[in-house]
Length: 436
Image (cartoon, rainbow, N blue to C red; front, side):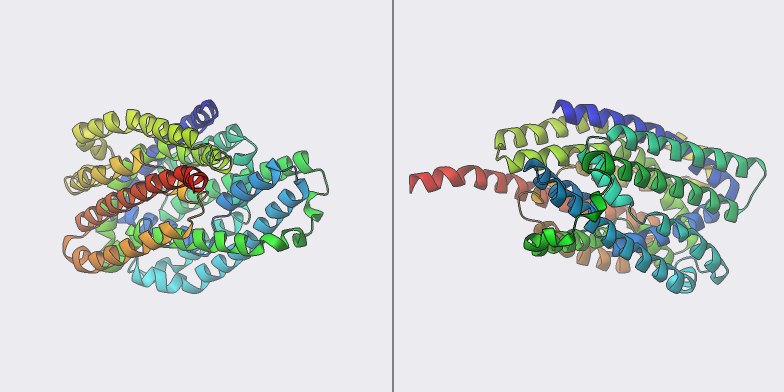
């Protein structure tokens, strides 16, 4: 738990600073481009990011899990082979993603932004996908080797650079093209920094020839690796469709104006989510180690302590946003009121629950149940997509806020129940077998 707190401290500081700078970026962008312009920026950036995630196999989690397994056994060449395989898979998926961005950009501009003239910007921001050729794998390696401080520094540098570029664009009264360029540069800097640091640490841990480790070393674990990657990809895809594509759904079933309202409310709730995100990464590393050692008391302690830490931040911060939310939204522009404030209040309900139980899904992976979250997310995805088709054309941004908050509540409750039940089952298993 000390490692969790220390590493979370690094990332919490970085994420908090980044969240503040991100809010500054959003305020300047909204004042510069207005509600509709802010909606366009949200649609363009989310379009490329979501296609990248659609083809992604979330290699960070795979790297942490399997490098941890082999490293604990002193099998360094096998660990290096896992990292090499993860990089190759991620490079392939990133190239596919960029091809899809280019091919689908005209359709995306017409359906989501209702403006075919923005096709070029959709493709231009898609260059960020190419920068992410090994970002997830690199981030996973840095997490496993306890380099959270490096990740924190890269995150702050990226946010600061993006903010400075947005300030320049605001001063010179630039347009949407300049804003998209600023966000693109920030994405590239972050991806290159993490990738470079990961390659350096791989060399430091395994020697200069680590990349020569043959993939054949993993032949006996190939099915496990593929099963893990596919399961996390499906889980990530379902999250993508249900939780992380709201601005695209809004653009398709409503208008860029509603996207602009929703974007601001979501940006403010991210102030709550962003500081908790580091707990997911740092807790996963420790939980995976304790599950492998069957230290169930430690697993429960980590989960309980993590929820207490998250609640200590989430509850008072949520109260503050509920009271002062209208003032925060007014910083973006009075035209965002009152719609964005109503959306903010609705979103807070779900965010409080998902923040406190941030570990609801991650523990099921080392417990050997990577498919369970996928099944839960699929069921809720069907309900949320159906709700989107029915509610969003009529209620716009408010309907999307209701659906996302409900999604957070449903998925968190189901997976918390399953996690606690599974831990209890595996705890009793040795005693039952001994009794027999």
